Image 1: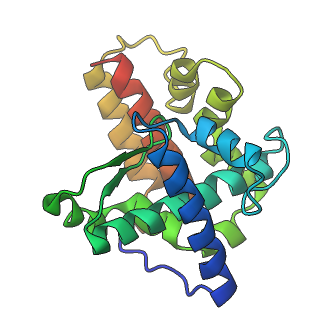
Image 2: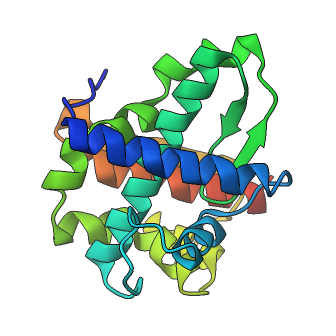
Length: 206
């Protein structure tokens, strides 16, 4: 399903461009890349007015911080592509500024996460119940918990009698994607948390 970004006000666009510029400067200073958590901390230390200056213990604050950052990241990635001046590799575990490659630009339009984060209606319309589902694994990782266990809990495999291997996990992943896909009435935010859990588990069960 293609999601068209919601219209943004001039103020939204200005704020996003300002945050994108701040992020670009931080990433240029960290050529090895950095995690989402570290990037948020760096922005707070620099007193970025576009990131909520509040603790991340509140789930809605955490979601808003996460969404605003990723919205700015995808805007920045598009700007780098259009100017052919670089590429931004985006994941919660590592965000890295890389040299421009022409082939990477053709992949961007089909990126469902790009469509999700560029649609500001998700920031406005997501309620606390959605946030709990969305951040099941992300929340625990941010609080210093076990990301592997959190991802298994999200997949409901933490107490499973099944042999845990990549094939079993992929099968469960496909089941959850089918169940929660927006085309079937599911939640986009829930689907995102499932994708994040799969990304985490793939690193442990290669």
